[in-house]
Image 1 (tube, helix red, strand yellow):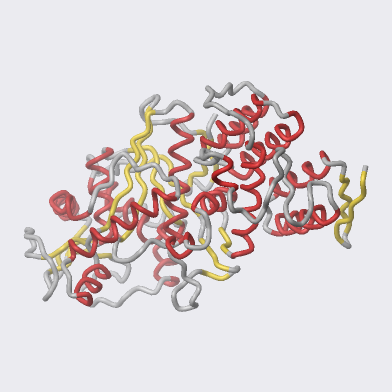
Image 2 (cartoon, one colour; image 1 turned 120 degrees about the vertical axis):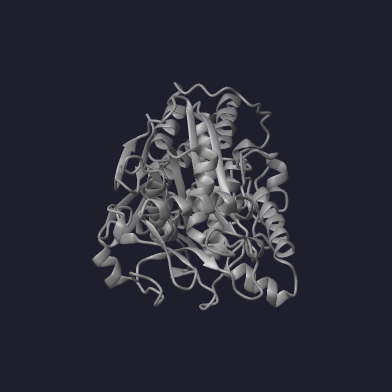
Length: 473
């Protein structure tokens, strides 16, 4: 029974789709004025994982991820480059698709572009004005009146008073309230514009997702996802727009049943930002690391937890993924229909049904790899590859992945890294360090996995306030 952490409810809830057997899911995608960065990679991979598991669970999934192809940054960059907005956005859409494909991300069912839905945005804005939730300002802009929507702040869990006190809001003398946000921007020089009842202009950012999601998935759909940074104000404003525009007889129409947000990406324990010089595009990372290693690294952490990027963590991910591929080397494995009653498959399913707990699911993969290494059983190898395939991993030929790796295995299926083989003193010390790090990061599934792996190799760990020591059984 799948449970999802619903940001709106602030708890895990049993997932019950609006239509039995079908899932409608909308995820806020990229603003295409530059190459995608690691934060974008996490959104891509996380919700690809979510859609894969929903499909593996038997659901017919309609996954929509939008593309923002008109906004202030896009206009500014196109003007700086001396190119059209269409030329700029298409170039970076193509780059996004290339990066996404390398990361093993299956294309969403639909990828609507904001500029294709301006008419729908105008219709929604008109409905909001008619129902008293929006107003036309003296300068021709149209603003949403947050005071007129009773539920404003329910996603962020803050009252309007708290939000006014805590948020830095750009001063605009044309607003009735500092928290009011723009729905339509009146035309300005050197900017594209569309005709509207309020004069030529272009839509604000927030209205695009409300219009596209309702057009493609309906007024009420199952899952809305995105990065944690979008929770406020973007998703809060989406709720206000959509539920007010689709209200009937004065009663708001619920927009979404489950709100999902993935955690932030940090770099060496600091927030990723261009000003700090620790801002990495996907392309930069892929110059140094295999794309599947990056995907593995992202999925190794729970989607709601912070993801701390560093070369050390990517090197560790490479080592771990190499262990899995090494277990498969030498086996002729075929795709199998997964028997979810199998003990290891059942553990994997239990983990994934618990709010997509990929760290626990990966612990199952490593247990299977250990079993393959010990027994050489092709059945275990096939199950390992099939379960990993649900996460978009281990689908390449093992020799192709291992070729050229600094972690070399002999022609058997036992991993022997340069630090020594499984059970050696140097390898044991290395894994104790990694276990300590996992415990510090509260990745207890990985900590338990390492303890079990060493125990299977005859190494007993003993924890104390002074640290961890080990002995042979």
